[in-house]
Length: 361
Image (tube, rainbow, N blue to C red):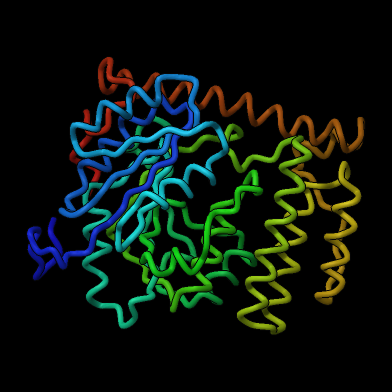
């Protein structure tokens, strides 16, 4: 698909940079790159930054250099550092962030660029639909949320904090001007660095234009994701810092009763990450809630773990809440991988095999 009234050979056609940080992604990186190369949008550059992988990620990515993919490597510094490196190398008028295990529908970028013709501001941030999958991308579930529409920055953040919604990283198409105004990714955040980064992009924008027919396929990573906090003290501290930044960003746009209510809801929902192990952070959360005019209650465990708390205490109940989902996730992942192999032969991860025709349906 080529956006209307534009020629692929027109040098005024905006360049889109697809930026991919990669670390030990040998199982997925080839499919991710295939989905980037297959974009129907005609003017793009693709940059992969390997963040010191110890597997074959760098070698596999290098096989795509013949298709114009730029591949560089650096010592392991984390995803945010790899993203900052990729951006520093890019020249695009628009930035498409893409994690090394996710997939872009072939027309994703083309549809979003075409939507720019209907935007009144050059500082409009574009988002898209996204569906979650494990192996069978053609079975991805696209479940609309309150963020799947055109919104102002303050309305978007209100819904994110107050209703616990988010947009997956690859859904955004970001004008370079907004990326430069937002500044680099925060390398000190061990999780939710994408959430914090796009808050700054939102603040720099004039609003969000949602393009429903543009699609991203988000590979669920379960408790193995970078954003999973678990029992990590460092991740808990980084998450608390990210929470404070989120609240500060929203309040910088509007100071009102509805904003304070959304922030208190956000604090109460997140308290479980710190209670009861990190009483120092719990006290800070409660203090901020009080400043906003609220009072937090002791968090409640899901019913399936509450009996463990009653018999053995909070710590064992939370441990069960970490271990049991990990076991369930491993089983779900193994089952989905088995079904993928049965449905598509021996190609365990090949983007485009089998059910390819369903991707744009």
